[in-house]
Length: 245
Image (cartoon, rainbow, N blue to C red; front, side, top):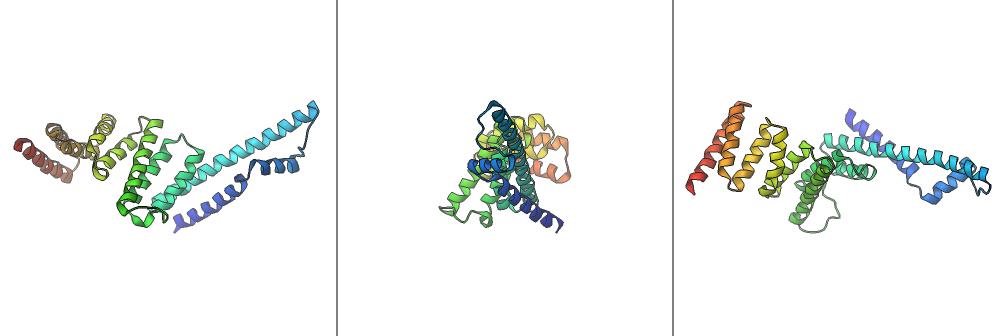
């Protein structure tokens, strides 16, 4: 309940920010004339005074806009925590307008779009096309958002893992997943979840010996009994496929 109350409080803050920042350039000029006494300066002294006053107003405006972007990001994460992916997605879209070079925001957009693709509840009511077409559009939004996050931060390992999972299990393009997952495991050397996904990608692309090697690595690390059992079972499936060809 506390989380929900906080979310609605933030909605109120965002609304206030929208009212203060959504005015047109001409409206801002009129407001400056009224509040700062800036009208039509002519002398050098009047011009200097006008510039100083406009500079102060510009700083205030930039600061307010930056704060609005932060509010959208916070509100998006609150919705994400409550698994309200459609609302979270819209918030992160707005936040990106203020922070277009923030890799985290694109990562969150990718995560939300991936969930939305598999839940018609969160689909935009105006979306056109068949169920499969709409689902694929959201999956491709997720793909492009992961790519954008990685273009901003090439070492963003969570985005590497995310796009790897997307390619293997959602888009069924395991060949595209492999370089991302290999880079991910070069950093996260003991992440067995990443290893399972990479081994599956190798299996899908008929790189059986590489898949077996990854399963052996999982077994060697012994993360827990269930994962070891899964790795052994999957290794046997891959081994059978290798020797049946």
